[in-house]
Length: 433
Ligand code: UGA
Image (tube, helix red, strand yellow):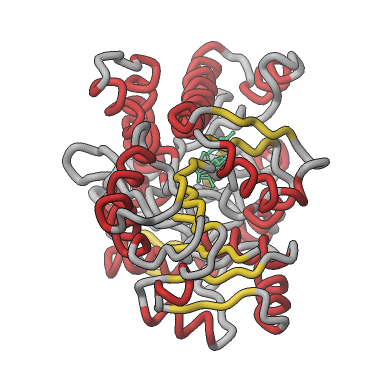
């Protein structure tokens, strides 16, 4: 089977490498020459746990290759997967479909046999119909079907999730397309549930799932605020809730608000779709507004700790939108640092993987440390914004010696609070007074 993947980002690249590992012949296309050059030199363009080894192995065996040339990738392909970005429109916040439509237009010219065009990018309901129209217009004799195959990979766990999916959802309106997709996904048959649905349902499932998870986070964050006021402990509350299998114990970690390239974008796009179809999604609308508010509130919480010494140094640990990735897109950590920059000129930041990406956003407004210990040198408060394992096991005694005043604001609840207090830190976490 030949699979062409258009777009070599956080979705396209791990998916391509995953399929190559399963024995499919994969060609990945991208528009950016520097990316393709880099991949062809055998270097990765992004960080994903476990990707490097599989990438090298499959490049060496020739199961995966990278090109700028759409024609060579698409011609003879059984499946062409669209994995290009659908970023939010800066004003309307709707998913911007220009890249996916441009890719459809371009690939259409090279369809030379029956091909399934499978949309992996997250796209609003009805986009499959548009792609179908575009391909017909460009190439009226093309023999093809458009299916929707939403991806549910988490960044940082993309390789794990690729090989161990909870479910595979395929939105296909034709039997012929289903047959091809069955072949491509045959290695997963005994691994997870398959759901065959209408294309429009499949497009909606992706948004409805992400929006639900975002809402679950908003709910636990609101509950954490309540616990801080009422004397309960959110960790105990979340544990008690999560033991109910109907609720489940995942996505009940309170924090600085959700971020990343998916939840903010997808909740906004879903809300926008609700407005478009005259069916207001009020829970999602509220989730979006409250999540934005939360980041500003958390920034203020940190600033309050240096009220008596506004020149005091703030050490920030964590810039990526979550642990396990170098991605800073829509990172709550970045938004919180931006909020702090409004009030402080003495901020020093550190992240194990995301320094380069963060620098591109924060520029000279903060200082950059070489390690978490360096960041805390002479600091008046240490703030944890991303849940990296390294931070969990930070040596609190040695940090205390380095710091000017012993204060910790742990917005990810990963530090052993009791130990911190015993060592003499003033310790604040989320969801416990
Ligand atoms: C999310 C979904 O989990 C994936 O299933 C989906 O495929 C992906 O979006 C996508 O649409 O491409 P991802 O953005 O990688 O994956 O990140 P998550 O692990 O879901 O975390 C999102 C945000 O929620 C992060 O900022 C994280 O810190 C926050 N979060 C998550 C919490 O604050 N609390 C939690 O309990 C869980």
